[in-house]
Length: 92
Image 1: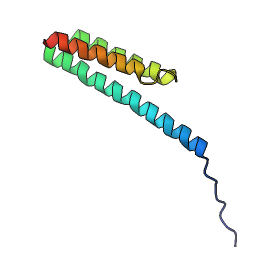
Image 2 (image 1 turned 135 degrees about the vertical axis):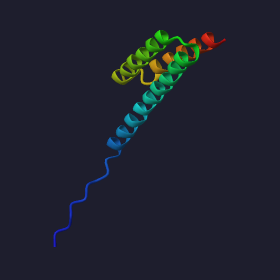
Image 3 (image 1 turned 180 degrees about the horizontal axis):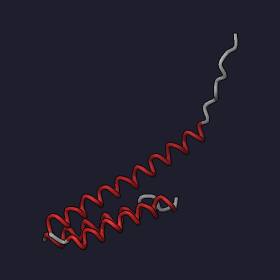
């Protein structure tokens, strides 16, 4: 009988896939949090133009974070901080 061929476990490839998953997850988390706060700016403060601007900025930040490996989640965090600041100013 023929034995099925067993593939060896490639730890480096597994580690690279895991790091990519974590990186994209962090980018997505900051994207979604920015969208949530931007919608709060539009809904609570009735500043829909600013909310649309923040939504566009968060999408651009996510694309830049995904395209440039060294940046990762940092552009999304900057946009989230901007969104939180505008929400605080608009409701304060």
